[in-house]
Length: 87
Image (cartoon, rainbow, N blue to C red; front, side):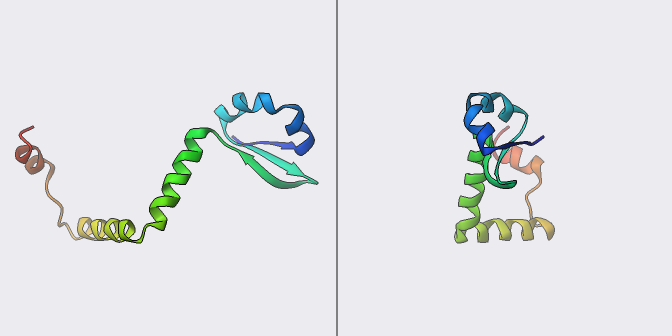
């Protein structure tokens, strides 16, 4: 769940954001318009990593090829993978 606070509240209650971020993001507004988002660190890292992946043309091409191959049934059955890896 998101929490919305004004910029003034944000300045006064910055130390409380750590607790609030456990439940979701905190939206900071100025004059009623969102200007900042305070998000849990794990979420920020996840978003940054996703953006890195999306920006990497070679990696995205590889992902698209893999999805296409899976849709075409060209994958390797799990039982065969386990046998090949001696699991």
